Length: 256
Image (cartoon, rainbow, N blue to C red; front, top):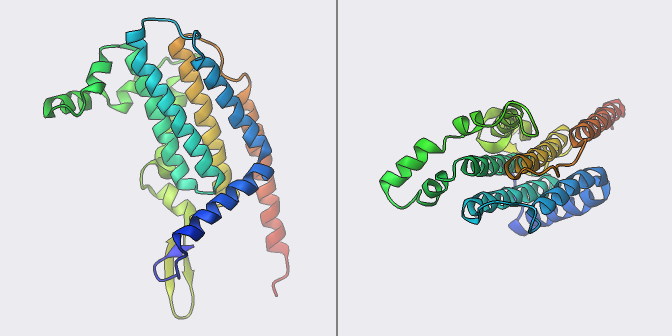
């Protein structure tokens, strides 16, 4: 717990803890690693030269943005594996937004110019603001197929609730109060385990799958991992059962 007056560790100690958590995760979360790798393989397959056909001028910005989305996915996974739950959801949000922007520009290529000129003048920034509202952009997604709008919207709203914005769902999932006879400390856990970590792992996998499904939709390919959503649910269910069992064991242990 990190709180005011709690004897803060140094930045080196904090980063060492994050690195150690990643090392432990690489051995204890191999099934999740496998799911994340499937997303990586799918994205790399879609981005293989020759897989995407079309006018180069119209494709340049969408391809740029889906690779930008992929960079956020990788950062979300890395942050999650270190145990930093709320920042993981913030990165998931950026992954979804980048992929949705790419889809919008793929459908309406002239939006690419609006996007590029965003910071050129006050008028250009206003034009960007009116054309790149995430809600209407999601409304333009199909209602069925590999990336249904309501699925993408639900994932996006989850990222907003748990870290994409400073909302109570995210803050309270990692925050708490330590109280003694002399002091009350209010702070957050920089590194989480148990249910918060499991929630972030599932979120990262769901968002990664949504990202490659949007890529399938944009570029008319079919490389998203088959059956991945079902495997994410199965792995999450098994993880939750372990978390509950561990919690019961701890509560049943006699106190010293």
